[in-house]
Image (cartoon, rainbow, N blue to C red):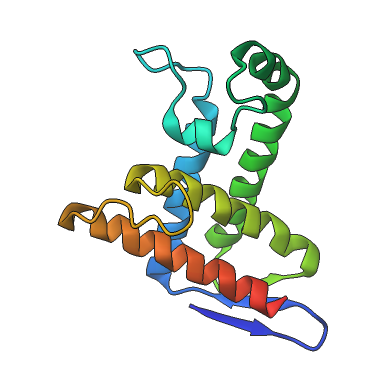
Length: 158
């Protein structure tokens, strides 16, 4: 991965083919998760990753949270889906990706959303959590850290 900043304030992101496929797959998974938000788990609760991506506005007050969700969740999920699809489309085109101050924002939001979903799988709930340390979780953890590095690189280029 290489991030370059240009005099016209644009950013060029160059990913290896493997990095591009990985990020594309993660955005596809995010879209699928958001598309399935109406499907409830067998226990009747919310999918843990969706609860992280679309948190309750009023923790402890399910009725108020449900009412708030009724008015806001579709738009928020739609924005998250559009961000992920935009990233996927740019990745599908291949080659270096040129981003402006405006077009980098959906990328940053999408990377945040993917990292939040991965954090749930890893048992990371707040800053400083180490999460799952088992050998099986290490590939996911490395992806989580790589996404953080990508995000930081884009922010630094801004």
